[in-house]
Image 1 (cartoon, rainbow, N blue to C red):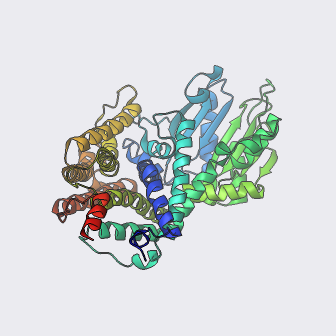
Image 2 (cartoon, rainbow, N blue to C red):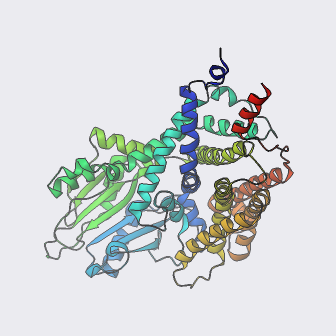
Image 3 (cartoon, rainbow, N blue to C red):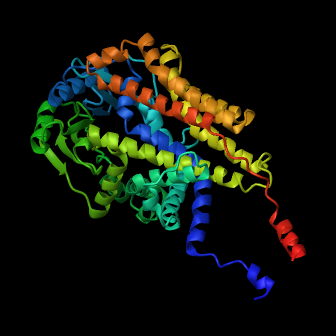
Amino acid sequence: MTAVEARAPKPRGIRQTMSDLHIWVGLLAGWILYAMFLTGTASYFRDEISRYTRPEISTPAQLPPAPEVSARLVSQLMADTPGARQFSLTLPSPRSPWVSAMWAAPGGGGGRHGFQSGRFDADTGAPLAARDTAGGDFFYAFHFNLHYMPAMWGRWIVGLCAMFMLVAIVSGVITHKKIFADFFTFRWGKGQRSWLDGHAAVSVLGLPFHFMITWSGLVMLAVLYMPFGLDRLQDKRQQAQVTSEMRLQLPRQAPADVPAPMADVAAMVAAAQQRWGPASVGGVQVQNPGDRNARVAVVRAQSARVSTTPHYLLFDGSNGHLLQAKETSGAAAQTQGVLYGLHLGRFADSLTRWLYFVVSLGGTAMVGTGLVLWTVKRRSQLPDPQRPYFGFRLVERLNIATVAGLSVAMAAFFWGNRLLPAAMADRAGWEVHVFFLAWAAMLAHACLRTPKQAWVEQFSLAAALLALLPVLGAVTTAHPLWRSLLAADWTFAGTDLTMLALAALHACLAWRTWRFTPKPVRARTPRATRAATTEVAG
């Protein structure tokens, strides 16, 4: 065999090809995926966060009956908003013990799409006075809209990253032939090997969940990415019928412009409860209230089943007769609804929701360890590890700002909720501004400090902000941790305890990063120089 034949490169196998694909796809989408995963993880407690950020609203000992609440609020909204052509009520639940209402403002004024909104006491129907806050809705919307861009652009970017994630999952399974064996192996303090072990462990732990959450996210937005089927339907009414199979979209009813008293809404809700079971009604929608052509839809709660396909009973609002029972959907809509429901987890009880949270947090760690592993692995391959090239430094700084900086930004959001003046104009918007300003500051900080200093300082800052949040809550609200524990108010107590647990996690990460001392890596000789030296020596 000649020297040339001996040096000929071996053909690349499928695993090596999949490894390269896994690495680069994961890196290119990793920063957005990490933010999507972490904010999406928080969104499993969206309702609890929304309550936590409104400490002025007390927690009732017991919720009033749904028929009574519905009738009271419909009558009150008819009296308070004469001329409104549509009401939508979300009835109270143990997770959100107030009535959320939206109504079409007369003349199309008001908030988004001409609607106004408010929150009302479930017992009295009185409007609830609470601070203006984005609450848990911000994290939920951010994880698929990315906030500071047009919604459609954000969803296209999120969808593209989700496709990258799906490719990364499949290619990662193919690449790691001992992935399940490595799940039971973890070597501390071994640099690249430790990061790889950690990455494999959190990946295998929730592999079915990670695949489901990625695939279902794509299916949820499939009509956006592939609108060709709906576009083939020239009749707008047919398009509306198809959409109504997947989303709650009641058939439009023109008003008769003939006044007529409303039938008993409480009886309609009671009939739905008798049909579906107790605690099964999630909302009430009214079209043309006080008109002869009034329609009342009693909507089944999504917490009562996995699928999100709409179930409702449609009543004639003027006489109370049942006009339509929408309780089935086609196979395609039902499949989409089940995947949607699995993704959102709204059907889950407390234990299942915590399981979602923990496994999704593992998915966040999977993306984060993958990003860090890219720099750890390549640092040892640099010609001079002490003076890396610009692209490597950029990736390293973005990793720090994404992984550690996002934790600081999310903690800053809650600090903003507690400290911003209650009467401040656009207060909810400024909570969001605080989030992004803190995140931008962490990126600047990462660029000004050495990587190790930036990791330690940002993890430490996140730990301090999270640990002090319960203290801040005790000073600024009527819900100190000890009082919430004594009252068994688990929305406030559970959130404070979770903040403390996350603070401990970030403190541990800061301490381990501070303690870690990498082995000295010699500068690598360029491959061409090594080859020339070998030939001369030969």
